[in-house]
Image (cartoon, rainbow, N blue to C red; front, top):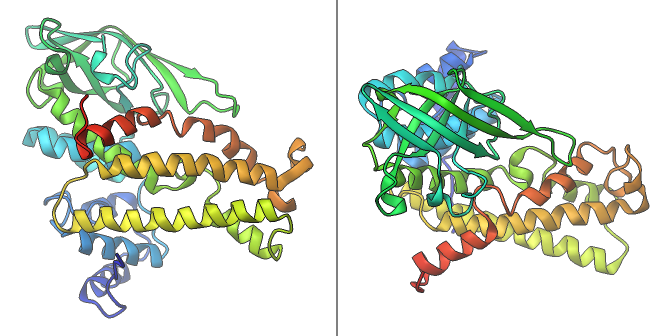
Length: 369
């Protein structure tokens, strides 16, 4: 399972260092223009690199201290879907500013009565000449309050089986008729939002792919979502990491309590297992296989593990957890309290733990729906 990246003198690493020598402090636009943000994408947006080469490029950029643009939903989910189903005009319109982070994206999929059973969505898109009129409500819309554009699923044919009447749209979030209301979480922050569509008019070219064929594109988005959510580690990469916790344990010389010490060991073991699963997923991508149900395996394991890790961090804080400035083992709080509270969302967001297990049962084990 070991995935060995290229050594220091590999031509791909030299290529990155040579480019950085000419661009010592590259902007997000320069990184996107050069193809470094998504080198596995087709030209002119990427470098048409194989997945292993893309990993080498990104590893060399990281070693050089170069950060890539922050646009996870745009780059990780919307971009691959637009490449798969969008027209060349749509790709030219959306992909470059998406890669540079100039246009930040959100996802408009879940509804109050259609979250895990996403195909039951009720938001309507009715064609009127060269426009679609959108009416409905979305919920748990991550970053909709700061996004420039969103990927939207809406029902365009209510008279066919539910998966067959859905279409996929790219929506400017400043379109008249869109109202975004932040949802205050128990963390105190507003990561999620409600989004309302009241007679929102979209031009016909906002449709990605064919009308009523949006479910196949949604599956591409969801497959990429499950892989990318867990790639960030605990709390989807937004809070303290497992390595942060293990470093605190090592700094303290270990944990005296045998039960807590065993929990630390179990969390570390599962981190190693998830790392091996990561390598299996990457190996599949390197071999040319698109993300599949293994993303659901990773998500089902990683989200449970993330919650257990944050519960362990809380227990390692002890009575100090009642204080606002105390983290695990006496460390500064450093958003550990936030991570413990946000961890409740892990087994819900991006498809509930139960839905992930249904996918595994049906698509891998071949059990009946």
